[in-house]
Image (cartoon, rainbow over the protein chains, first blue to last red):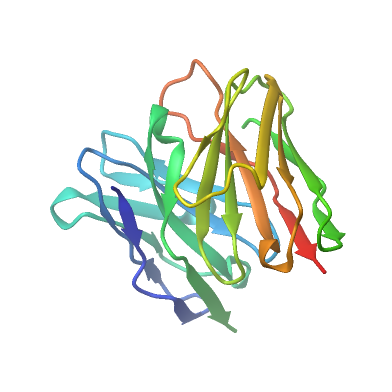
Amino acid sequence: AQSVTQPDIHITVSEGASLELRCNYSYGATPYLFWYVQSPGQGLQLLLKYFSGDTLVQGIKGFEAEFKRSQSSFNLRKPSVHWSDAAEYFCAVGVGNAGNMLTFGGGTRLMVKP
Amino acid sequence: GAVVSQHPSWVICKSGTSVKIECRSLDFQATTMFWYRQFPKQSLMLMATSNEGSKATYEQGVEKDKFLINHASLTLSTLTVTSAHPEDSSFYICSARVPGTVNTEAFFGQGTRLTVV
């Protein structure tokens, strides 16, 4: 069965600093990979996804992620964090038809210091 | 992108009562919808896959008699929490996929926060 690990439960960065959120997955085939962001009490917003092709994926809000098959990783990055980026971030691996059945990681809560 | 709407956004109910949560695809027809549950400060867990016109497929450990799923039309799936208890208090989120497309993500509703008192 597939699994997703987000090693960092909490991360605090200063506004304007760079950010990297780690994600490792376990899946027997080529995965569909996603990053979602969730603000308190809200649903999920898709930041970016990887299905195939270029392993460096650009998303919304200035985020990007790189799929590294050899490391089974799909880390999320942003060069300069804004205070509005404070939220919970979930990495997910998708299986089933077009990868829509999602297995989520435990999430990483991002706090941004002024 | 496609829009998925959940109703209600939040609900408080008494222990022992049943609560129905609706998940609608507003601008597309969804043959398959997914229901997730999220406990406070935890990740989302897939509960079941809802298939239009057929029985839902439940994940291991999810009680199908407690969490009734009905997907009677191509735009509506409902989750009914029967005889709710405080331990059922959680954030329930649905997602739906645009059928007939390739390499598209599932779109999520805004979630329903259920509190059982």
